[in-house]
Length: 288
Image (tube, helix red, strand yellow):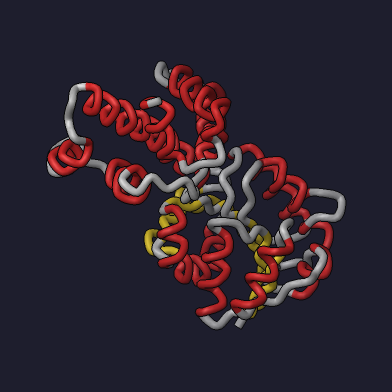
């Protein structure tokens, strides 16, 4: 079995790396917070390595990081993955960043004869734990085939979307629509309460009609009904993705009239201390 280096043991990365361990892979974990590394060690993972040490010991490097600058530094930095990796190895990035950054990384990877794919995921922490994530992959066909066995462990709906960056473009459209649906849920339930309706009654009725959506189901059942602050997907990370989707729209000259007011609403929620909470907490901002 291949040795895997997994960089980024956060809310998504930890369960994904754990599933690779359970599948029999030898997984080396690296995380900024060493408490996360200790938790991964208790699961059976290998920890305690610097980035160069980790890269030199594994056959495949996977990254799952929150911000574009994190991905750029870890993979392209002076002491990053591509500085230490050997030819014919594979790098998979599960983060959500910009398509242009993936193009830049692939260009550098090709100079070292390294396979590279962008593979952003959807399905939240529940999907990460269950190994049922949707994975949208961009990259050359040969790189996708090399990565496919690992995708089969952590995901269920795996799609090769085309050349490098195409997986990320699909993911950004996905999260743009997630943002719209989140506003619809938040404002709909706010209107219901102001109109004197019980929000559970409204959820039960609407979820059996055309207003039903996976986001409505997720937000209401997993967070709003339970009033849980622990994020499955933090509001500030969705905001980051909305900015990336807006950047993509400007780059390709697509007209998105709702983008600006939507982003402004999430910006205001972030400024009002909802950023670290789950994205469904937009409901609490709207209903405040």
